[in-house]
Length: 122
Image (tube, rainbow, N blue to C red; front, side, top):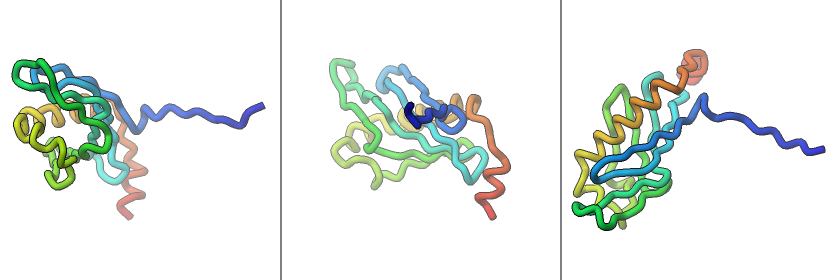
């Protein structure tokens, strides 16, 4: 008999898909354990397409981290993978709107644990 236990992480994480003209793919959104309305957003498998949509660069988990706090998106450029920054800068405004949309959708599905937030702020 195995001692393996599996747990759903849906309470803390949400996977959100995006299909746009220049950005498509899936993102992982995590609710902050410290503050209601705060989320971390990571790419899981996101393509930044060229204008003709003939090719693009794929963003993975370690390529950037975005913070969304009450709808404000923060992606420090020094924390974006340097090899992929040029492609993201080309679509930066779209990229920020996508991150905001992803966090907004996830916020509708991730329950807020006010007790954990209160405990984390002590």
